[in-house]
Image 1: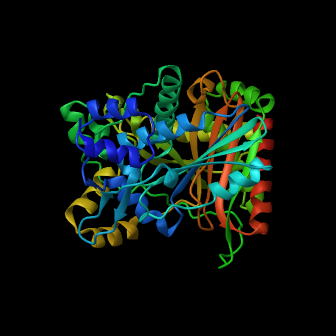
Image 2: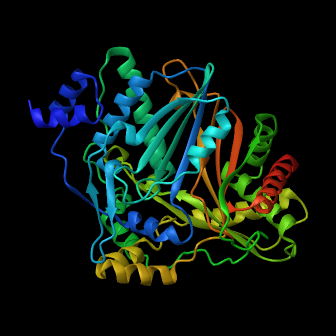
Image 3: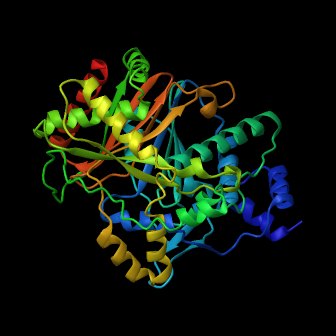
Length: 451
C-alpha cells in the first residue's frame, strides 16, 4: 500500500480506512498539472462580464449524514482533480496546478433559523481562481429541514457537467450508506472540447472542424436596468411557476410544435417587449444555451467540463398574441436545428485563436470578437427526483442560478422539478434592478399563462 498517499487522503479528512484502501487500489497517479482546456479559457475571459460562479440549491425534509457527505465529497474531488486546483494565468500557456486541500476548505454544515438567508449568503459568495479548491458545498439545517447548496467555478463545468457531478455524487452517497463502499467514477476522463466530434464519421468530422464562423450574439437590446455603480451588489431574483400553470402551458405548446425551451424563450421575449418599451414591430433576438453533449457518442468517457454553446432565437416582431410569439420562436429554432452541425459553428475559430497564439494575445483577439449576450436563456432541463434523492429522501425543491452578470446582461436560468418551473436571474445591481427583474419574471409567468 502507498503509505504516503494514504496519509495524504487521511490528512484531507477522509476518515474511512476502507475507502482509502479502495481508492489506492483503483486510482492512477494524480498529475501535478492539468491543461487549461479551450472552454476553461473562454469562461476565464468572461470575467469581464460575470463572476463565473454557478449556483445550485436543493431542499430536503430530512438531514443527510454529514460524515458520509464529507467522505463522498473527498472521493469526488479525488476523482476529478480540477476541483482541487488553482488556475495559473500564465501569459504563454495557462494551466491548472493541482493543490492540497482539506474537506473543511470545501464543505461546511451548520444550523440556522433562516434557510433562505443563510443559503443566499453562501450562494452569493465567490471562489478565487487562485484558490486551492474550485467548488464549495454547504449544508444548512433548520429543525428537520435542510438545504444543500453548491457553488463552483464555471471554468470547471457547466450545467450539464453539474448534472453529471450530482448524479455521481448522490449515487456514491447511497452506495456508501448501504455498504460503506464507493466507486470513483470520473477518474482521468477527458475535459477537452474536441470530444464533440467523436460521434461523426470522417467526412462530417472534417466539415465540422472547418465551420469557421463568429456566432456571438449580435442583438444589442437590453432590459432598462440602472447604470452600473460601485456599490452594486450580487443578487438572485427568483420565480417559481407552479405546475398548475406550467404543465397545461407545456402541453398546449406541444400543439404548436414547441419545446419547453421554445415556450420559455417566447415568454421571455414577449416579457422583454412589454417591460422595455421596445416597438412591437422591432426585431428582437436572444441567445439560448445548447448542450453539445448531444454529439458525444460515448458520454461516459468525458469528465466534468463545459460543452455548452449558444444558438440565436430571433423574432421579427412581438406578434398580436403569445401564440404568435411562440410560433415565431418555433420557426426560428427549427431553422437553426435543421443544421446538422447546430452549435458547432465557431468552435474551430475559438480553437485556432487559443492554439496558434500565446494566451495573452489570444484573449485580446478572441475578446475583441466575442459579444456577450444581454438577453439569454439557459435551461438546465427537467430534474427527476430520483437523480437528487439521498436514499429514499427526494428533494422538496431544486433551483439553479448562474454567474452574477454585470449590467445590462439579464441571463435567465431555468429548470423544472416535479412539474414546477424555477426561474432565476443573478446580477450585480441595486434594489431598483431587483424590482425590475422581479416584474420581468412575473411577466414571463403571465405570458406562460396566456398560452
